[in-house]
Length: 361
Image 1 (spheres, rainbow, N blue to C red):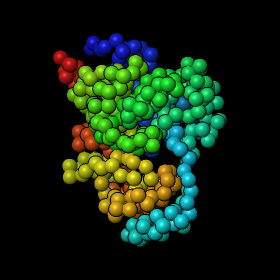
Image 2: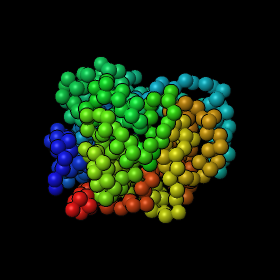
Image 3: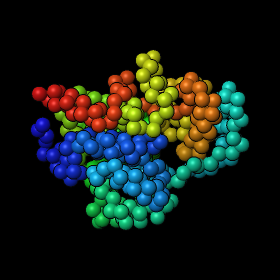
Image 4: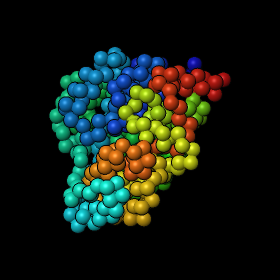
């Protein structure tokens, strides 16, 4: 398959055969999933949230047993939340009826369930010690000194942008490539320039803008679930594509049986909501979004609100009811989820690459 110079340079740099990245998805991506994607020449990824030194060490140890290919480790760089006891108490009042529907009690207090990358300086040290090949960030970047330390150590640094303003800032700070996250993308929206209006750009339009204005490789992310949609992004100038939702249905993912079943239900709708975590995120519409979306503006800061969302999901899991898990848990899914295939990750990569070749011919 013939690729553009920018794509081929990225493939060479990351030691890949194909311009395909299995997205890092906290709670869903796993070492077997990342290793399986890597076994067919794609880039496997692991989502480590706020991260810790132990998480880095465990991730590398687990993946190294399965593959010698480089893996992408992803971390969150969200702003530290502002706690407001009154707001948090009020939010729990809105959630009480949902807990009651599950026969459970709402928690009395909520707090941020994890920190941001800069809260754990040992994490950076662990990444440097293990000579991390590829590291990516969501919700912005850590301190510039951390980015520079990674790059000086030979690490390839990626970060998500949802606008040209965000992308230009990332490049100015020193990232090696930008992940263009469109409005269609599943999971948490990586927007961090919150002082500006969100243009809600589609993936392809965002790719077009970024490839025209920036020299670094642009990686398209959002609504891409097969080789045909991947080809469209590459044609518009993307150096590679990142797929997340497409890999949720793979047997190697850590997604629950109920989550996988929901993705296979054609009547489901993918919507953007803030009620699960306090931040915009795209997932399947369910009982929680129907009840809480009218009060979304009242949700506590991310990730404090997520503490309540996680508690509700845990209460649903205790019932062992597939319907309850689907109705009361966040089921992140991009707009292309209806094209999901329940294939082993290696087979999925092979099919996507074949579709990509056919689309280009």
